[in-house]
Image 1 (tube, rainbow, N blue to C red):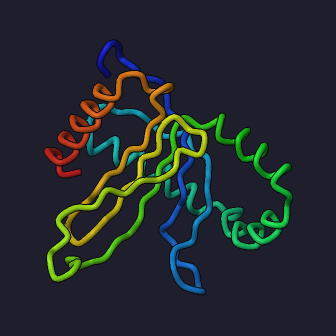
Image 2 (image 1 turned 30 degrees about the vertical axis):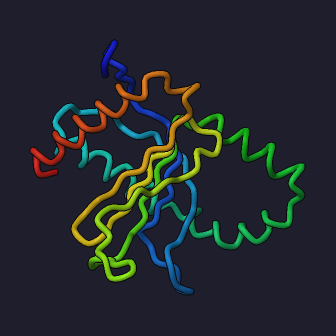
Image 3 (image 1 turned 90 degrees about the vertical axis):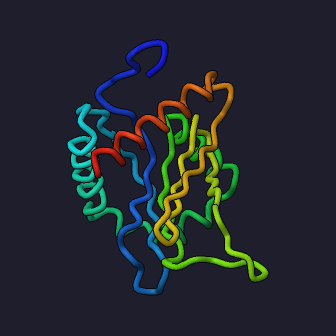
Length: 171
């Protein structure tokens, strides 16, 4: 990272494990706190390690309770719910979501849609990274809090460098 190594054993993030499909249709959404490994430096090994970490979280039996609990939580008054959500958000470094998109090209008024900019809410986090897969493309939206990320250009440079390494490694 520019200005210093910025390396720590992991970053705390909120990740919705969205691999499973709900029997009622659509994706299952269950926020989970995950310590994401920042290493090793080799991109292929780093992706493998992160994949194993996220697979373990997605296999947690408690995640299947999210649908049932959502109905109960929605009954809580805002005076209870909002402070609880804000307290949780303060313990997370960033939020990340992956949104599966269409598997073919999209059109609007007969013209092909060439790009999308997915934007997820920060919900109290410093940054929200939202990936949208569409056709053979991957679109990344970055929503950051300028008070928390004082050098947005450096963050974007690091992201571009990391994606370049991943593509080069075929990871």
